[in-house]
Every structure is written in structure tokens, then in C-alpha cells.
Amino acid sequence: MTEPISSKESECRPGRYGYTTGTYAAAATKGALTLLLGAEAPGEVSLTLPGNDYPPATIPVTTQKTDATTARCSVVKVSVEDNDATDNMKIIATVSLRGDSDIIIDGGVGIGRITKPGLQLEIGQAAINPAPRKMIKAVVRELTDRGVDITISAPHGAEAAEATYNSRLGILGGISIIGTTGIMRAKSAESFKDTIRAQLTFCRKNNFTNIIITPGNISEEAMLTQFAGKVTKDHIIQSGDHLGFTLKLAKKAGLPFVLAGHPGKLAKTLNKDFQTHYSNSGPANEAVINLIKEGLQDDIIEELQSSPTVEGITTVLLRNGLSPFIGKVAEKIAEEVGKYLGASAEIPIILFNMDKELIGASGAGREWAKDNGR
View 1 (cartoon, one colour):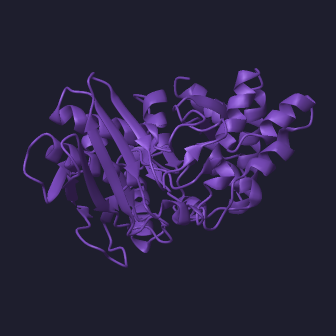
View 2 (spheres, one colour):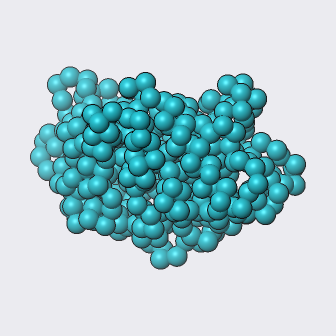
View 3 (tube, helix red, strand yellow):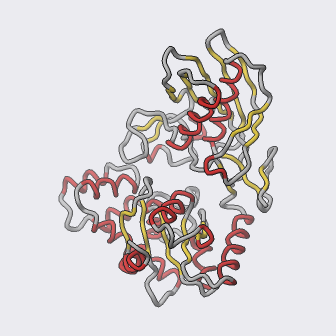
């Protein structure tokens, strides 16, 4: 049974987890809006997390009513991840009521802005990802049907962002508010490796043959959606940033597996990077472009080079009817994984975009998908 953290911890204990910046931003929003609507200033707030796989999050808050129409609430993010630039960071929500029913979310000081295409948000928007925006809107609707203006800020966000890859992605001026499930697990801690070991042991003892290794939540959800009825959660092992560790352990256990995920993560193998945390490995844009540029027109190559992410590169390819080139990336990933493991047979590779759509596969991956209903 996993337990949430309740205070600052310098080391991650087995089974423990924390919350994403998105959860903290939603908590700050709830605290500020609770006060603005006339309730007593809360000392903490409770949030239902997406998916309901974890208990509600209880987060301490500090609230302040600045005037009759505006309230502010701050929270302090406690991280369980090594080298997290946002650990111990103050995140603030400032809210005011509108005359309509719209919920408008924007970023203030310390929150980055999107300056390049290829991300989940439009150019000019604050770097508050779709899932956190949904969480923020949910806490607003929990409290009121009225419209609300919400500004999320992080006073030290600009400095913290210098330790991230935000600027390379075209996110300038601060941090990103991120998260898919609201949960942040210690992906670089030994406890996370213990979880991987336990899952693989479970799969081996139950004689599972359809093992799926994925980097994280989005690719797991994509597999469950695209292969509903064929793949269950019990068959999925999340590697987090420990891709190489998980692959080697699966091979040692004698478990046949499929590697499925977002090309932004999996294409790092083209650079021989099998520990995929951003502090250990950079983006794979250049490696992907060098792999596929032969046969492409110059204007397409220029568009690929201007894309800040591998997601952006795949978007350009799909928009121009060049999906076979994504398959070429999948084949190269399969080749690199095979070399890494010394595997005699090709590892099936399946690639999804951030919308959980299947966008490419290696030859063995296509065969596996066909055998499983696609």
C-alpha cells in the first residue's frame, strides 16, 4: 500500500509518492476560491485526483483575501523526485469572480510561456498543461457555477526553469505546471526500482506473455485504450526514467515484452540513453531528424528543425502524410534496444502521441498490433 508524503523528506521511502505541480496549483486555486466565496480561511484543502487510483490529496495552504473581489492562496511543493527543480517551491493562485460563467486560467510571474509549436498548448499560452487545467476547473466547479479568473504564479519559477529543458522546448520565462494523474512517484529512487522488480516477479509467476513496458501514464492509458480487452493494467510495467534497468530485468526474467510509448522518451535510445531523466539525457530531436531526413524535401526538413520536441516532429510528419518516417524511427528504436539487450529477435515497438493515438510501429510492433486487434 502506498502512502502519501506529509512533510519534507530528503529521501524517498519505498511505496511513497508526492504530488505534481498541477495538483499544487489546483490546491492553491481551491484555497483561494474557498476564502473568496466567504468561507473561513482553510488551513488545508482536499483534492480528488484524476482516475481515483489514489486517496484524495490533502495539502496545507496559506490564504489571503487581498480585497473584496480577489483572494490569494499559496502552497509549497514537496517533491519525492531526485533533482527536481520545483522542490520546496511556492506556487500561488490568485482568483477573482467574473460576471459570466467562464473559467479563465493564465500564468503569472515564474510560469513559462509557449513560444514554439509542437507542444500540447498553443503559442502564447501559459505553460499550464491540459490535465492541470482540467483539475483546476474541477475544483472551481466543486465550489461555484460562477465564472472565475485564475492566475497561477511561482515567484522563483524563472530561476528554477534554468535547471530544466524548458528553454529548449520553447517554454520561456518560468516553469511548467504539469502532471497527468496528479501523482508524482519517485521514478529515480530505489523504491521505484523495487516496484518494477515486484511487478516483473508478479508477471513471471502468473505466466503472462503480453508484457508491456511503458515509460509512464500517458502510454499506459494509450495501450489500455487502443488494445482494450487485450491488455490490462496487470500486464503493464511502467519504467519511469529507468528504461534500461527495466528492459534488462525483463530479459533476465525471460519475459517477452512490447515496448510502447511516446517517441520523445523512446527515441532517446537513438543517443544510447537508457536512463531517460532530463538530468541524464537530452532531447532526441537531432538524432531523429538525422535518421529520417534522407528523401525529405528541404522545406519539410526546415520545419522539422524548428520543432522544439519530438512530438512536434511527428506532428509535422503526420500533417504532411509522412507517417512511414515515424515507422522508421520505431525500427531504429528496436535496433538500439536489441543491441542494448543483445537480443536475437526484434523487440516490438509501438509509438503513441500525447493524444494517445497510435502513430507508428516497428515491423514486429505492427505484427503484434495486428495479432491484438489493430
